[in-house]
Image 1: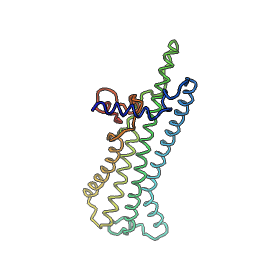
Image 2: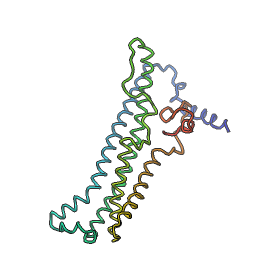
Image 3: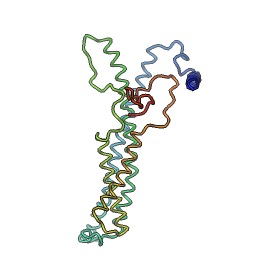
Length: 253
């Protein structure tokens, strides 16, 4: 069983041909540096785009959750609804609950996109830290008398993808609770069920746990198949370190 991966690795290295250092005779350091600069610049641009998409999706989700209340306020302002109607559960029209349910369900999509943007941001941040570690080692070797130390993270294992106590994790939890509240109230209102506090809390917890489960699966669970590594070097960007099982299998930690 141990011969098959080695044979596959040799075949992959042969298949890349000119993409490997062996296939590029006469390559010099001045030819490699522009590639590293372009790679670093591209990863930084991906990081900026992922961070911007994360904030955009968060704002979009909050806008969708606030839309039913804005519509209700507009209807009251236009005297389509009486202000006293919203004070009684049984007198609220069914279309108001339908709006709550519809916009709550629509908020699922930006919630999922926010999670994916957060994962992309974490992966590119790890890659950038790996680059900093590369040149930090070189600088410390060449300028030891200056006592230079990097002022930015150089840990390729940081930040963690699954961090529920970080701001991204807190945002996911709070947004999941808000979406669950609108969906639960919308369903109970359309079903004309008497709004018992225990029933509302149970429904909110159920939906919020489902949404948070999606966040946990996408960030903490290991992928079944990682990218092929034809050169055989360790995957530093996803290596957890130590003797943990994740470090042996290349899981994201």
